[in-house]
Amino acid sequence: MPLCCPQCGGAGLRITAALELPPDDRSDERTVQALECAGCGFTGLGVYEESRRGALDGETVNHTAFPADENAFAALERLINSCPNPKDSRCDCASHRRLDQALGGDESILPGIDWSRPRGIEWIR
Ligand SMILES: [Zn+2]
Ligand SMILES: [Zn+2]
Image 1: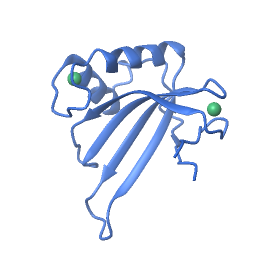
Image 2: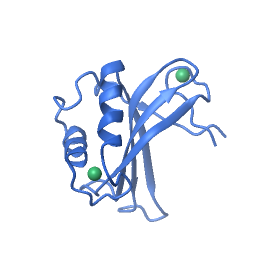
Image 3: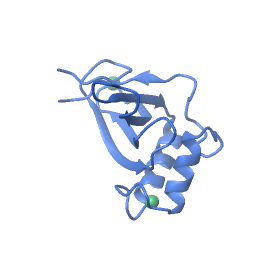
Image 4: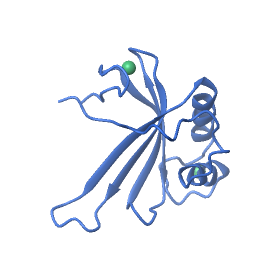
């Protein structure tokens, strides 16, 4: 199933890089993604969160995109691509630490990402 671009609504949104982070107090699984739309040129930082806590009937999934400018998007891809084990949430490399801090609210790590405008991402069915 393709992802729906939060900006143009088309099916051109792609995950160009992804890195898994350890669980936090809200989520059991967290993935940071670099998102790019082939249709309109939107670039963003994606956060995919899955929680199996507190829900009686399965899991809660949150998939959110934060708009990123060109520099922020390039820096994000560089961070993800410089990790030796992006699929290992227990990896303790500099990229993992920095991305964890960025999601934890340290806006100085990836300047150019608009954290104030989260956009929900949906699958196109
Ligand atoms: Zn688009
Ligand atoms: Zn790493």
